[in-house]
Length: 464
Ligand SMILES: *[C@@H]1O[C@H](CO)[C@@H](O)[C@H](O)[C@H]1NC(C)=O
Ligand SMILES: *[C@@H]1O[C@H](CO)[C@@H](O)[C@H](O)[C@H]1NC(C)=O
Ligand SMILES: *[C@@H]1O[C@H](CO)[C@@H](O)[C@H](O)[C@H]1NC(C)=O
Ligand SMILES: *[C@@H]1O[C@H](CO)[C@@H](O)[C@H](O)[C@H]1NC(C)=O
Ligand SMILES: *[C@@H]1O[C@H](CO)[C@@H](O)[C@H](O)[C@H]1NC(C)=O
Ligand SMILES: *[C@@H]1O[C@H](CO)[C@@H](O)[C@H](O)[C@H]1NC(C)=O
Image (cartoon, rainbow, N blue to C red):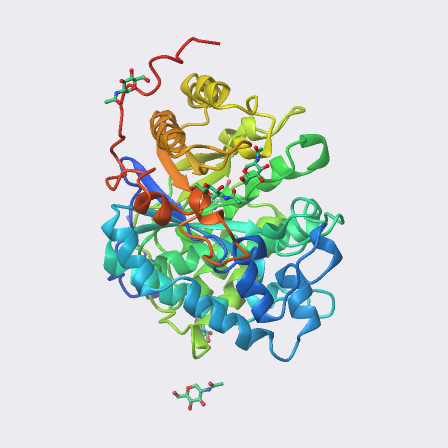
């Protein structure tokens, strides 16, 4: 038998081994969102926003009320002004407080513009420098033992109309088009690579595809295909970097991550690697070189992801949408989790009174309904204490307990938000929107796994 010795490049894995170990999903998620940090929503910090030079208006598209309008109006100063915001809105003191409050997870809302080469600077306006701040924050979280979800919160072309959380309040929704899906896939590829090979990204265990797409699936054409491509890009990047992914092999001959992704992409004939996925992988490879060589974000491109766990891919659950939505469970390849957001304050969930709120939350069957469609595990990635009526302190305590008990039937919960501004202009905003204040005021227990009264729902179960 003729034994052919493979060439060195074919059998020797040349990326250096990984010193970092990927974080894993907590057995129960007790989390907060780091909202208004890297995607600023001016309603949460009304005074600081005016001090920065912004404006306030209704609708929010009518003035400088979002990041896009701000960056467009102040092209020469926007980066410095946002730098100051990023440094002061989320600090080491906040990390210490969250750790002291027993928080084990943060969800980090991010804009597509944090990957700066995805921005078309002729028509799109956003501050630069966010990625270095994300790196700084992740390092602080890592030291505190808090794990993180990278949440693609503000998508290219905006995913829903007239919302500050998309970065651009506009009725012109362009996300659900091929070029913007492609940019989002590239974003996912870059973030996945960084999560495995940039040492600061050690706390990251999950990546969320799209925050709050339009609920009517008839208005989100192509979203099901995007879900599948998103997972394929994540798994493709991982396989290329040496993370073990079932069904994928790679040539493992490259000496750096960028080349490894290119080699992997060109050798793939698995049918999920369509032209959009391959283009996203190629774009990922070149953007990684830029990030690795930039002063504020530099890292060693020769690292691998060998021995690391794959990321948890994360989607809003199928029941987030109506009108024949695609089911993200169909896109799963490896570990995947689902997200739902419940905000009673915006209406449509329960009648605007305390008893109806309690009857609704105490009989919530979202976890079961999702699981029946394969959307499990489910965490509640946004919720809060706000109500449509003036709630008493006693009610807010019950309301916090009941929500935590309901959401803990699933994988856990992530409060919106870790904090909001304290100012005359902000008034009572922090009472119901700030986790840190909620703990101080006694609505939320200091131990997030506890409640004040485990029987809080007893009078309301099956009471509808
Ligand atoms: C990556 O590796 C390839 C060869 O595999 C080399 O041509 C390229 O210059 C390397 N790029 C960087 C940024 O190190
Ligand atoms: C591509 O397909 C051929 C034949 O179907 C197979 O032999 C080969 O291993 C595949 N390559 C990869 C990278 O999967
Ligand atoms: C990058 O860092 C080097 C060495 O620290 C420094 O000389 C150079 O000026 C920096 N470049 C930029 C654009 O900040
Ligand atoms: C809540 O209280 C405020 C201030 O006391 C009052 O202006 C407002 O009308 C009340 N809202 C409702 C819904 O009762
Ligand atoms: C703010 O909350 C307090 C109770 O904590 C309440 O007495 C007061 O009326 C609220 N103010 C407004 C404007 O709602
Ligand atoms: C807990 O809530 C139940 C239901 O409202 C109530 O009957 C019970 O008295 C509460 N327990 C305490 C210690 O407040």
